[in-house]
Length: 115
Image 1 (cartoon, one colour):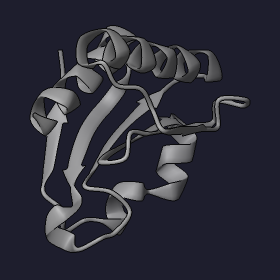
Image 2 (tube, helix red, strand yellow):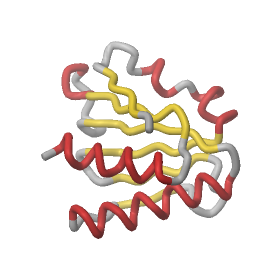
Image 3 (cartoon, rainbow, N blue to C red):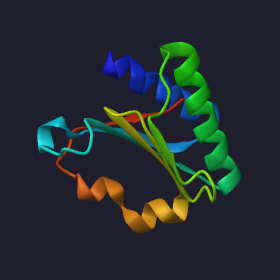
Image 4 (cartoon, rainbow, N blue to C red):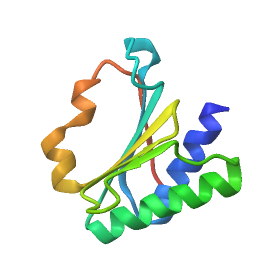
């Protein structure tokens, strides 16, 4: 079920031309934050907002779920959509490069997604 949810999220990102889409399985690294991260980049705040909106729309339509919490929609530099067991991070490119979130969980199994 989780793989299906992540696939819907990844497809929603790719539909809006999100870049460098990946998921991290955090269950094996013992974090209490969440089970999975989905991470992607957009080239502008408009693009980041469009990706976030599409994820919210697609997960509601296809899975019947919506984020428990959202953060960053006001400025769209780094938007977080928290579904509980999956947390989606949508960065503008320069913010992703600065925070290097994937490096913090480098030991977590990683999967990439593309068109």
